[in-house]
Image 1: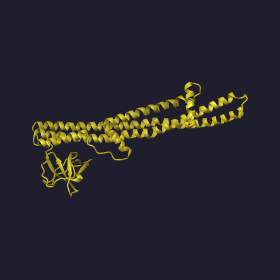
Image 2: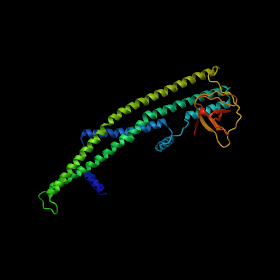
Image 3: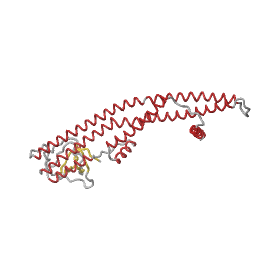
Image 4: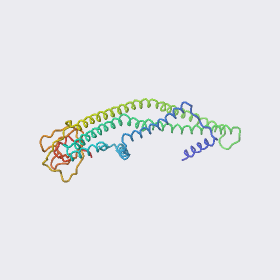
Length: 335
C-alpha cells in the first residue's frame, strides 16, 4: 500500500510539472510506439479474419470456449452443406427422374462439394494465419507489456531517488535534527546508483524485446503469404466446381444424359431403433449397394441415419424417399 501511494504521488507530481521525469531515448520510444501499433492492428486483423471465416458470432464464442477448455470443437454443417442437403432431399421427393428433381440433386451435390471446399479453406487459414497471430499476442506481446510495466516501475523508483538526492543536497549546511545532511546525501546517492543500475538493465531487456517485433513482422509476412495461397486455392476450386456444374446443368437442359445417375431405390428390411432419432452423417467415400436392402453412397454427401437395434456395423440411411442399410465405417456422424 505504501509503495502504491508513493507511485501515485510521483505520477501526480510529474503531471503537475513539479517533479523531474527520466526520459527514454528516441530510438526506444520509436520501438515502443511500433510495438503498440503492432498489437493494435494484429488484434483487429485477427478479429476481422475470424469474422470472415466464421460469420456466426455465436459459433466464434463457442469455438473460443472449446479452445480454452482444450476440447474438440463440434463438427457443424455449413450453410452451403445445409442448402445442399435440402436440395438433394427435395430432388428425391420430387423424383430423380424429373427434370427439376434431377437438377436439384445435381445442384445440391455441388453445394455440398462447395461446403467441403470451404471447410478445408477455413481449417487451412486457421492453421497458417490465425494460430500464429494469436500465439504472438498471447506470448511475445504479453511478455513485452509485462517488461514495459516493470520498466515504468523502475523509472518511478529512479525518479524518486533523484528527488531525494536533490532534497538532501538542498539541506547541506542547514541545522537539522537527527541524521546529518551529509549522511542523508550519502544514503540517497547510494540508492540512486542502485536504482539507476536496475533501470538501465531493465531498459536494455525491454529494448531487446521491442526490437524483436521486427522479426515477428517477418514471420507474419510469411503467414500472410500462406493465407493468400489458401484463398487462391479456395476460389480456384470453387470456380472449377461451378464451371463443372454449369456444364452439367446445360447438358441436362438440352436433354443429355445426366453425368451423375440417380441412386437406385432401396427397400430395407430392418427398422430404425425406436429410441434413437435421426442423425446427420457425412459420407467418407463412395459405396455401392450390394443388394436391394442397402443404399449406395457418394463421397461428401450428407444423409440422415438411424441406429439399428442389435446392429453396430450398419445403420439405416435415408435420402429423400430412399432408405437402406449402409456400413457405419463409411459414415462420419455429425453431432
